[in-house]
Amino acid sequence: MREIELKLEFDHADLARIHAHPLLAATASQQKTLHTTYYDTADLVLRKAGVSLRVRDTNGRFVQTIKSASGNAGLFDRSEWEHEVKGRDVDLIAASGTALEPLLSVRVRNALRPVFETRVNRTVYQVVRNGSDIEVALDRGEVAAGGRQAAINEIELELKHGEPTELFRLARKLDAIVPLRIAGKVKAERGYELVEDAHQAFEKAKPIQLDPGMASGEAFRAIVHNCLVKSSPMSQGCARAMRKHCTRCVSVCAACAPPLRPSPRSPPIPGRTGLGRS
Image (cartoon, rainbow, N blue to C red; front, side):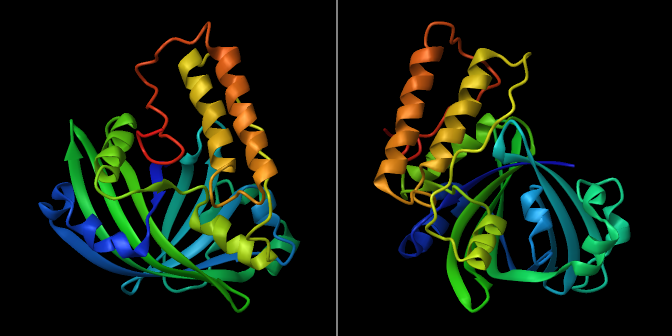
């Protein structure tokens, strides 16, 4: 299963204003309590392979989820496998045919253990825009590992049906009333930061894979998105590192400007300080 979503962050003080946004206030909402446990080995075999394994308790219903990041779109586009389980323990039989299966040596199977958890209060809205179905989830809670905690104040816009461009259009509508920021990391990455005690560590941009058949606009978007995520407030370990990422963005713009053509399949790239604002 393919999961396409856009993750945004907001200030906790703006929560009521988000709920009152006309696009959400006119839509029925559903409240959920999520308690999620993430599993890995002591030497973090799954993390190093770009795979996550979790079991989520949603109001007494347990679902195991395996995720693997896509090489092209990174944060917004992932492969996902879900399987309902009886409790908080993982079901490795259900990992057959997933990105986790190749990692499950005897050693890894025996070494898997809980490494961190999240507790979140979620409000869910179903929004229909221009023929696209989008699930809007407002999450408030925390991620905890080894006695350390970090707050979670996120909006997840998940595309259930339709065009990815609509995620960005909806984000800009929300951002017009409440300042939002691109979430540079998913919850799993933030949990691993606590495990590794490296929340403020600078990250080098990861290699990305570009398909030779991609339109120039799509390739440009993937490259610049990689730069923007690594220079976001969640990952700016120092001003010097951030300047390097900005320099990369300028270089990409200069290199791609002559051949760049608009692509109807390419959603616009949000600005650094706000969605749709420079």
